[in-house]
Amino acid sequence: MGLMNCNQKIALVYASVTGNTGAVAEVLTERFRAAGFLPDVYEIDHFDINKLGRYDIVIVGTYTWGSGEIPAEMQELFEAFEELRRPELVTAVFGTGDSFFAEFCGAVNRFRDMLYVHTNLAATLKIELMPQEQDLVRCEKFVEAVVRRLVEADEKRKRKAT
Amino acid sequence: MAIDSPLTKIKLLNPEHPNKSTGILNGKSSGLLNWNDIAYPQMYDLYQTLLSNFWKAQEINMQDDIKQWDHLTDTERDVFLRINTQLASLDSLQTPTMTMAMDYVTDSSFKAIFAVISQQEAVHNESYSYILSSLVSVAEQNERFNQAKSDPVVRKRNDLILDAYEEFRQNPTPQTLFQLGINSINLEGIYFYAGFAFFYHLARQQKMLKTSTMISYIQRDEMQHAYFIGQFVRILLTENPELNNEENIAYIYRTVDQAVQLEKEWAEYILGDIEGLDLDEFGDYVEYLANKRLRQLGMKNLYEERSNPMPWIQVFGDDMMNGTKSDFFEQKSRTYSKVSQSNGFDEL
Image 1 (cartoon, one colour):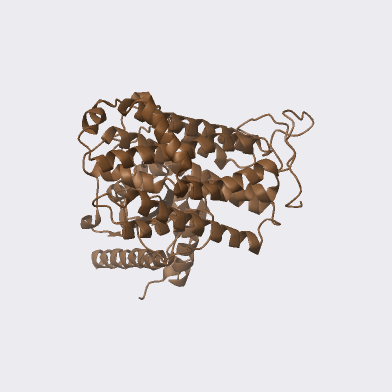
Image 2 (tube, rainbow over the protein chains, first blue to last red):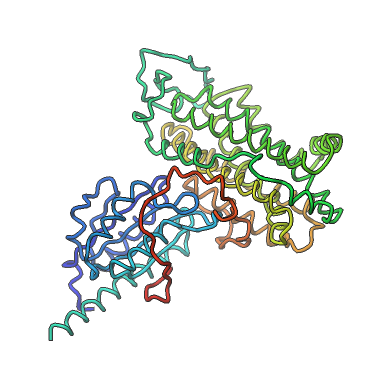
């Protein structure tokens, strides 16, 4: 598609306790690689929040327990996006949860609503516990949506430049 | 470690050992718990989540249900009481079983979580009594409990679990503890759901909503218990690779499948006369449920992959469960308006 994907700096930052969100992060990392990207993958505890501004694309992954609060370890990242002032940053958020709760993947919803206001949100993805066969297809679509958004953003920039 | 060699009850205090245990079984551990220095830090999150679920039956006023009780059909009343006592029987087993596991688990943080789970099972047990006391006489309550004890279908399904629990009680080894874990997942993660389906089905018709509110609290707790036991089993198998053998993997699939068949059988027996509950659909639901439990153990689905066929079997939202919601995790962040696909992104 004429994009120099490798020049786009992409971070995938996630929190996982039982390993479900981590498993999705792995699938997505592999799909991004297949699409020509080299994502920097971080568990939230190992991510330096100050480096958020260096990326062109940030993919957020969060688990949800209970009725949908953001996990404590993701709170700082949430606030960093609010203060970033980079509306052109392409973002997407994924997560795992349990549909037995009234709000399925509530933490994904919280990030979605915030990222929509402060960044260029491309996609959201919710998965019940460990990913199943059909979830792999949805992971694929998630990556496609991010790539599509990048192409659009790139074209917009070019139009502006001319 | 030999998986069939007996586990010994651990001493309360072993001052020469570290506070941070070297293993969940046969580990070196002083017996003292400092939550800031534990082998699996995620256990602290689990512990806090369990505590934030705290509730008690008396906070729920049964007046509305008492008024509605006389308007239920005879069948509904009969099934209501039978399910109530049957669920109470399951919880009665679970309370002492969790404390039994505590005697042999060497990691103090896991012991603490077993203690909280045991306490919650006691609360569930009490809540069934509280519901009964609002609706029928003590004589009828006792009659219903006796019915639950002698019912052959109930006995058959309980036997599967009881055999494993008793086996561990008589002969505590790593192997029997593993089997206890799997059966505990079946009890908490599968056996409750025909009962839950019945109460939520009444709730769909705006009947007995106070009872369903309690059921919602119970379901929320049980979900957390199933997560914990799932993690416990996974850690047990990782720390003790001898347990992670083909035979035990086959044991998990076989035992979960037995629980699934027994739950379907129970549903047909107890819910057969309830109008509007599709038992074929419930059969699919039980399989969906079992797939979830297996994935929580890091295993593959045993049944056809499907999305939740009965999404209304669900913990009530916060609006229905206010008053007892803990604010441990209350956050100060600003609120955003809800956006969706129509705002121009892909929701997958």
